Length: 304
Figure: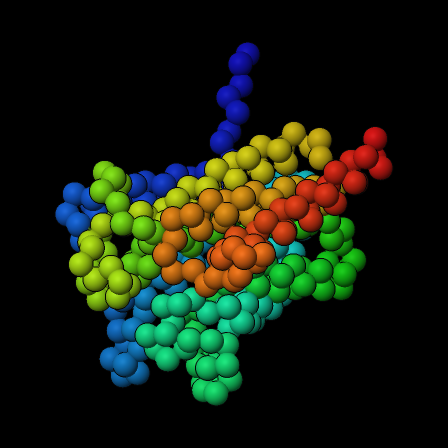
């Protein structure tokens, strides 16, 4: 008798995300309009609730849901996923904010932030996350620190849990990037390609005030991260990698994707290197990819 293999439960919310994302962008391409940034405003507090936060939180929950099911398949306790998420989230936000404070994007000049010193001269802005400013590399470092502390405290295999965590992280990044769509940010150079995103005048960089259509950099990064998620999940199920190698591969994949993304981004902080000017994120990504690649190659040589 032929038995049908049941699709893991986490695929259903993933399919829902894909359908919603395709529907949203198809509507945008057809009309050139984007839903308002805020879902609603709590009148008593004059506090708007933004779609950006909903997509970020949704990505975290969906990523953690996938990891929890993978953990359960291993016979481990899935409660560690949700408890560990709390341990990772706080240092990740701190790290992401610190990275941005040290490398603010040029567009922050519109709110009085032209250099890191401007944050220290106006300490309130250090905590004003609603004004923008989170750097993914700082978030990765902070999250990794939180994961290490949690696994050390619970006496868990840190490398094995990190390999699971990056599977959820890539999916969370793919979902979370759609928050940038609602904020009308993270767009690239002007283009007339059929899939170009239309940015309304208030959200355009001053140099491009008369341009309406741009590369949807947020969409490129979302697609790259979703592809990375599928690859990491497939490799994890093959069970042929050493502990920690999946984490290293994630770092390389994200770094390569970031280098490619910076070729179309407009709002990137730059740094001079040997007579050349590079986006700071490109330099960090290249160094990270080379360092992690060298470590993975060294470990493989030792193992073989």
